[in-house]
Image (cartoon, helix red, strand yellow):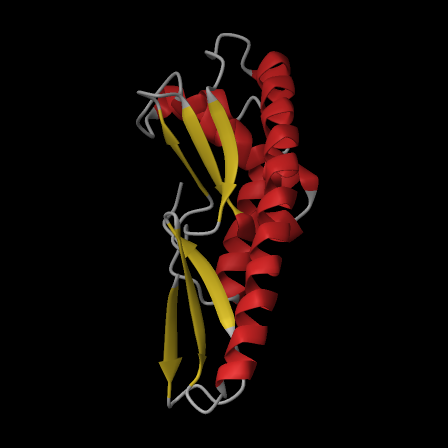
Length: 166
């Protein structure tokens, strides 16, 4: 565990996982007792988040399978589909070599048809790794593809996010 105190941090305490290590960020002014309480609280929150995401990852994999059967029957079965919190410039990513798909946790608050679109987009990369015409033909088999693309562009523009185009 890595506890990082900051003189600039006034009130908030946050924590995240960096591989197997937990990093806790907190104000410098906290006492040792407050630090211990916050570390315990943040570890509990991270564990709760991890257990929720495991369940969600299973549902995400099932949803990917369902979408593949419906829209991309020729796609190979993904080896893993999971939520990740470290994608700040992408909605999702795919590694065709090991058939793994990752979706940004920022999608979790969006409509299901938007998440489905990103899943279809990443599933298409299992067939076609580049964004060529064949790839886009595969993606646009999903009936709400254009609508979802517009939705994601709007979210990016409204939040002034610097997110790469698909």
